[in-house]
Amino acid sequence: MSFSPKYLYVPLLAVLAVLLVRESVGIALAIFSPAPPMTVLGNLEMYQWTAVGILCYCVLRLFAAKNLQWLETFSHELTHTVVALMMMRRIDSFNAGRGKGNVSSSGSSSTGHCFIALAPYCLPIFTYFFLFFRPLIKTEALWAYDILVGITIAFHAICFKSQTDSHQPDIRRYPLTFSYLFIITALLFNINTILVSFWSSKNVFTAFWYSLTSMWGGISALWH
Image (cartoon, rainbow, N blue to C red; front, side, top):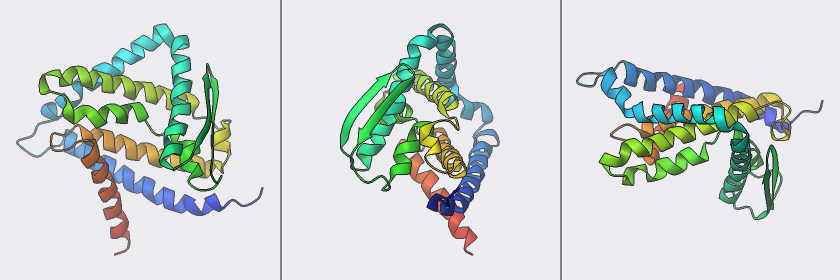
């Protein structure tokens, strides 16, 4: 098997994954071992309606799995499309059917391609869409909105679980070590960002920055 340049990124991804696990532990401690006057119960209340949304989708899928299969494929191809557009690609075609689909875009096959190819396995675009508008929602309606956020979280979690497979062409496009480390690292980053975005002092934008600066702080500490 020929050597792939992507192997050179494996040590970096491994370091980033470890730093993100460290950040996850810090977030868990902030939630479950808070400094007074914060309490565990008070912290968990931030996520209670989101948990209801997660449960609602899991129940819904028991009765509508086949009908939701097309939506799962659609979200997969849509994620390819969104990230391709972020990479300034031109979309030539988009197709999503039950269990299969494809997106064709312009541009170099190397520039940012791994982000486009692997994004559907780790980027919850519907969750980020709702979190983007969450700061605009009135307090009295936030419980219902958080149920919607929870529904998207469960939707994406099930998509990631069912679609992440070593036989997937997107994943096999690169060495499996690289692909899976990339997916794990990105998932950890997204989970941390989503958890922090519910904090009263944060939103999805400041939570994203929080995760970035925390990771950068860990990298800087390794150099000293």
